[in-house]
Length: 349
Image (tube, rainbow, N blue to C red; front, side):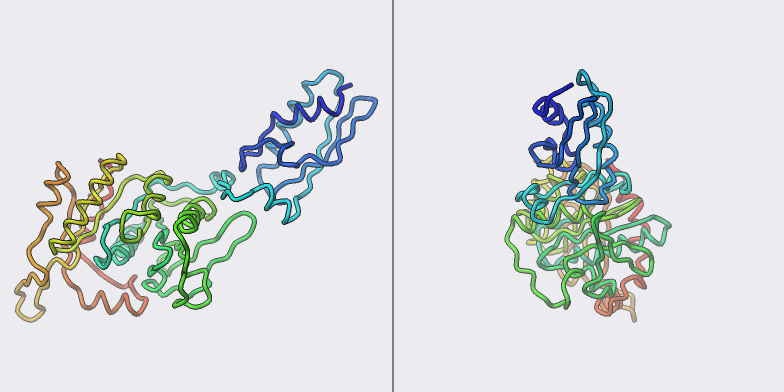
């Protein structure tokens, strides 16, 4: 018959799949009893009562204990940690939730990036999501612009639209079935400021990826904030990206900043899927003449900097599109240029 010390040492071999630490160090083994007949019984205090991996953990404990000499039976009773115990077990780390892997199946994870603000990344993200949804694909949007989110506004989604529990966060859903997660869906009013520092922002982005019940998606689009700092680095280094779509406008400054973003992607070995030059020109609805309001196109320079041909598209200034976006009706927007461009854009090089 094994001693209590031998049982506890055996249980140290079993790790919680979420926290990657053993059950004994996490104080998950409670009320251990060893009978003279060799029966071992104990309570397994889970981080959450409904953990779907509890049977896996239980089976592993039975395996290591039944390997001990003199053990005739192993009985495991499930319990749960108190909120205080759970916080102590988790510490300051944000746990990954592998339990969601059995539900989440994302085929293509695509980030939309510029490096510069005001070029229309959120609009392009939304337009791409709408285009793909119309073509029959299952699409989601992860709004990684934590402190300046605009995706919910474009789709007319009200604040406070997220629900969740122990199993994860349920995303909001648009009329076309696009799943959306954004900090503006967590606050009570859409103009509430989110004043967070870099580490908190990075943690929120990772939770939007690991803790959300995205389900089966063909495409999950990540709307990045401007710049190449914490938020962008978190996405580029932590998420399994298929690649990145770059967004620019015809100004020299915008093209310069996009080239900086390209250099960053090259250093991180992340594929560039294509380039969108937004607000590239204006076509007069009366006479049909084309006016380059912000100057000539810089797509050729960007492609040269990339060192290879890239799928690209020039999108015109569309006043009707802006009106639909402001009123939360972006799903009514039409763009023939983008419909032709989207399939080529998402072909992984």
